[in-house]
Amino acid sequence: MNQHKRFVPLLVLLCLAFSGLGQHLFAYDSLDEVVSLALSNNLDVAAAAIKLKNSAASLASEPAWRSSSVSLSANTGGSFGAVPTGPASSAGANGTSYGASLSVPLADWFSLGATGTIKSDGTIASTISATLSPLSGQPSKAAIDNLSSLQSYRSTLRAAVLQFRSTVRSLVVSKAEVAYKKAALDAAQAKYDQSQVLMSRGEASQTDVLDAMANLTQARLDYETASANYESIHQSLAMSLGIPTGDLPDFEQLLKAEGDVPALESAALLEKSTYLAISDTYVKAKLDAESSKIDAQTAQPKPDITIKGDFSPSSNTWSAQAMVKLPLDLVFREKAALAQETAVLKQKQADRTGETVALEYEQKVRELNRLYESWKKTATSYNSAQLVYDQMEILASLGQKSRLDLSSAQAELLRSAWQLASAEKSYRDALEALSQRYVFTDEK
Image (tube, rainbow, N blue to C red):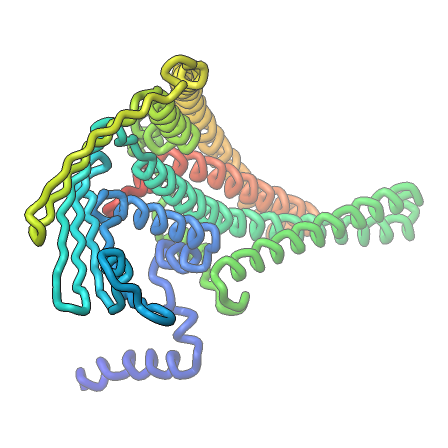
């Protein structure tokens, strides 16, 4: 008997799964799973990820040895007509030769090379060379480009997560608004019907009926507008997830599964330093300043010194060469001075941006406190509206209040519920914007 009882729930689940209903009911266990699906369909996140991969590939190829190369060659030649004789004929000897060369730059300022040639008569010629250019190395921006791409990816990812979660809460708020507008429409309809009855008894004027009709028309328009807004948000979420609207999960239940509204005192907020570290504006300003410093270093004029040595094992010979180039920029330093001024200016701009973002953080913390207090007051108002409705329901059951009074009280209660949902959304949106949970790092 016990085995039979355990088998029944399993059978029910299988029936739901095969009927297609089970897939919708149990497709998502949490809102985070739905967010993950939305991220996988987000084109902005995908584009930022590709950009990050490209910059990472460029950074990986930054070491000088990655530009090493091997060249293979084949040469052949001949002559037309009679072959000249004498010492001069050796310069144009016929035949085929095969060659190979290897170039290995160990650093921007030092490289090794080797060449070898096999001629048709079997002789081999080889050369080993080393080139030293102590002042030719230039700082690279590949690391800065990679950090900029990484920041863009993290910022895009974080914005996508926060935006989707905010849209989900907007759907719940819109649903509460539709419920309120529907109750207000029903109350307006009841009041209009009552005005017509009273006018037939001579207890109401034509003006009262026209006023009731105008209120009914406005209530119907408000309800249709709220319903259209709800459907728009519904379709937007379906598009973000890449699924039909009929397959959307119960977002209200997923939000409830995340728990009650957290108290501000227990929330883990970002430190100011962390907020600065993830601020797209501040990080980009810092990287821009670092890039300008590299430009200033690159713009500094310097002589070009090259020292090259060759050694040929096949002929037991060697040679050395030194060369110095003196550019005119050593005398005319306008570009270097301008680049230095730009670097100083960019650094000042980065510092100013940091101060602005720090003030922005403090303002958001103050706004979060205000929204939390606003939510608590709205919750109190909702509780009061609930008590009024409960009392009105009792009085209506005793015949001391009309159905119109009860409908008006219900509409007021639903209006308070809508306001409470809206206040909760505003508070949670602001809280998540300052939450440590949505700070993405390399490990996440």
